Image (cartoon, rainbow, N blue to C red; front, side, top):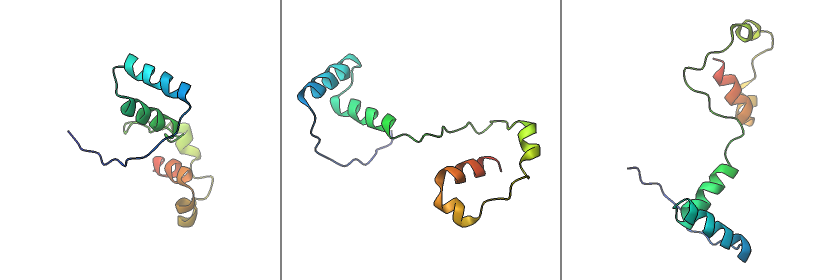
Length: 90
């Protein structure tokens, strides 16, 4: 099992929110910490889903892929979403 480094932090929540979070955590048989960590991970997850390695690009899309010029290295470094999309097509 992999050990993941964590940083301790202090959170201020409305009492009602904390009560509901504890209840939900207990319903899911989780600690409050694990429940909140999972909720935050979902909230901050990348908007672009990861595609499986065997994802097949439609041949029609491949045919038109050369119409636009490739983005520059600077553009790819400045825009994570563009880099993700561009690298998936290679």
